[in-house]
Length: 67
Image (cartoon, rainbow, N blue to C red):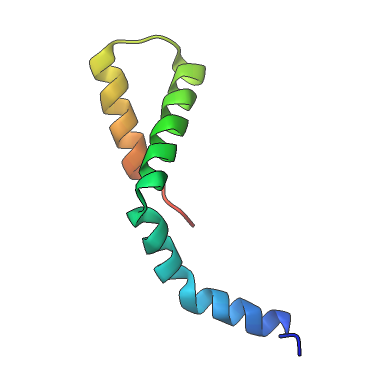
């Protein structure tokens, strides 16, 4: 017996926070985000001072969150 879309949506709502927390706690998430933020900074701003690059990366990493 298949579940209705409404039921699936309610289950997703119920487990969303736990799943997000699990993702944030996974070391692979931090590594992937570090790589993606670095690539985006390189693509958007190009070469820059190493300290600025690090500071911008940390601020962006902290500001990006899963919906």
